[in-house]
Length: 75
Length: 476
Image (cartoon, rainbow over all chains, first blue to last red):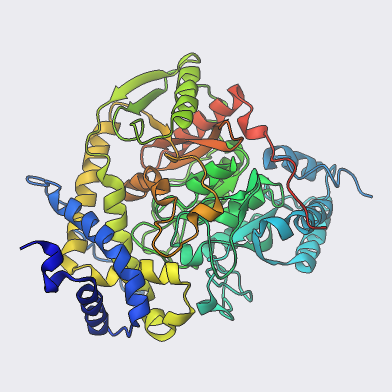
C-alpha cells in the first residue's frame, strides 16, 4: 500500500503520536508545538537509522560505569 | 588621558602582559578602552547580555595597585575577560540566553571563573549565545541575533556567538565559550579568531550550564593561538567538582610555541572534510595553508577515513537525549518560555529510545577506537572548520515551510566532540565576499601542546589572524 494512503502514517497521526509520547514523558505539549517538532522528527529518525547501520561487530566497548573512588575520611 | 588607552583593543595578551607588568599599560585604561568600544559597537552587534562597567573598573584599579606594589600575578593580571552567559559568576545572573532562567542568580563562581580571578583577570561581562547553547547559527529569538562584524547581515555562528563577535572586534581581548558540537570553533571560524576546544576533561565544567554532559567542553576564544595557550595555563587542571575532570598532568602550554613545523606529521583525510560538499573557496584556502606548512617543514600524510562521516550523526544522537534529560523539569514547567526553535530541537529528544541512545554511545566508542588507530600515524589532522560559506541571518531565520540555512555548519566540528580530542580553529584566509575562513587543527587527547604549536607556527607564517573587521556600522 502506498504510504500516502496509510492512515497510520498521516501527518496528523504523527503529531498525535508525538503528543502521546510527550505525555508519557510527563510533558504536556500543544498541537502547535508538536507540529514544530514533527518537521524535525524525520531528520532525527534518519540519524538514528544511520547509527543502527554502523557495524560494530567484534568491537568490545569499555565499561560505561566506573565506580567513584572513595575512602573513609579517617584513612 | 593615560598611556596607550585607545590603542589596546587589538593587542594580544602576550603583548599586553609585559607592558602591564611594567606599568606601561594600565589595567584601568584597558578596561575603559573595552567599555568605550562596547558602547560604540555593541548597539549594532548585540554581543553582550550584561556589562559590569563599575565593578570592572574597580577591579582594574585594585589590579593596578597590586602590580605597582610588586604583586604581579602573571599574564592574565589586569586583563578583562568576557564570559558566555552559561558560566556562573557569584551574585550575577546566568540566563543561558533564555527567558526561562531570567533572575537565576549564581550562588558561587564556576571553577573556571575562580581560576581566572586567582590569576588576576577581571570578569567584565556576560556574552550573548544561542539559547542554552543548542544551535549552530548564533541566532536567538529571545536575546536577538549577534551580527557578524565582517558583514552585519551575516551570522556569527554559534552557540558562542557573542564571545566570537566581542573578541573579533576588540571589545574584549579574550573570552570563554563552550563546545558540544562545535560551539567554540564554528563562531571562531566565521568571525576570524582563534578558538580551542580542549580535550574532554581538561577544563572543568563545574558551574557551567549543561547541554549534553558527555560532550560539553569549555575553552578559550582569543585573537591568537598564543593567547589560547596563556589561558589554558590558567583554566586547566583537575577539579573534584566536575566528575569528568581529568587528573592528567598539566604542562606549560606555551612551552612548545617556540618550535616550528619541522618533523610535524599532518594528516589530511581524503574523505568527508575535503569532499564535494565543502565550498570550493574554503577548500582552496585550507589546501593552500597545508601546502605552506609542507613548505615549512611539515610532513603531509594522506589518510583514508571512510567512517568519519558518522561522527556528526553520533554527536547529534547523543546530544538529543542528553539535552532533553537536562531540560526535562524546566520543559515541563516552562515550555512556553523557550524560543520555538530551541524547544523543538529539545523535544525531538523525547522520541529517542533508550536503546538508540545506548547504540549511539556504543558507536561513539567504536568511532573513538577508529580515530585513535588512525591518529597513530600522525601528530595532527588538518581540515576545514566548517563546510559552507557564512550564511545571512535572513537565510538562517526559521520560516514556515522553509528549511533554514546553516544546518551543515557543525558537520566537521561535531566529529571531535565525539572523540574528545583537542581541536583548534584559526583563520586561514578570506572568501571573495570578504568573510573569514577557518582551519581546524586536531590533535591527540591531552596533547594540546602540539595543536597549539602548529597553530602558532602557522600564524607566524601568515597574517590572517591580524586582520580586523572595518567599517562596522555604528548607531551613535
